[in-house]
Length: 163
Image 1 (tube, helix red, strand yellow):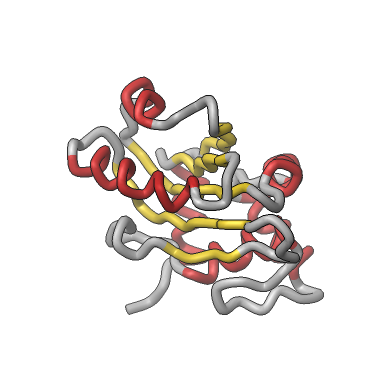
Image 2: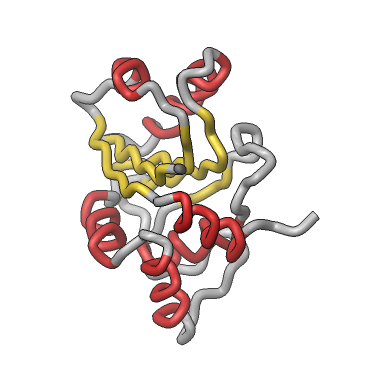
C-alpha cells in the first residue's frame, strides 16, 4: 500500500533541503519513494514553483500529469505541462475515487502558502519513527492521506506515463 505524503515546511527552500535527507533514507532502506515533487513558494510571488523529482522516483512513477493535476487543483493553476480547465472538476472527482479527497486538497491549499515549501511523496515501506526523526518537525507539518492497494492501482493505471 502506498502513502501520499505532504511535508509542508515553513520556509521556501526547506523542501529542496529535505531532498538530500530523503535520498539518504531511501539508500538506507528506511523508505521507498515511488514518485515525488517539490513546491517552493517565495514571499511576494503569486504562484509557487514546482518540479517533479525524477532522480528519486521509482520505475512505477506516476508522472507529470498526476502532479500537474494535483497542483492545479490545490493552487488553481496548471503546472507540469497539464492544462487544467473546465474539466478539472470532473477529473478532480476521479482523484476522490483513489483516496485523494476535497478535504486533503483544501488542507494542502490552506497550509502551503507564500513563504513556505512542500515535499509531495508517494511512498511505501517507511520506517516512520526513523523518517520523522530525520526531519526538523519544529519547522514542518506532516499532512498525509493513505491509499489502499486498490486506490494505488487505480492511480497508477490513470496516471502512469507510457514508455
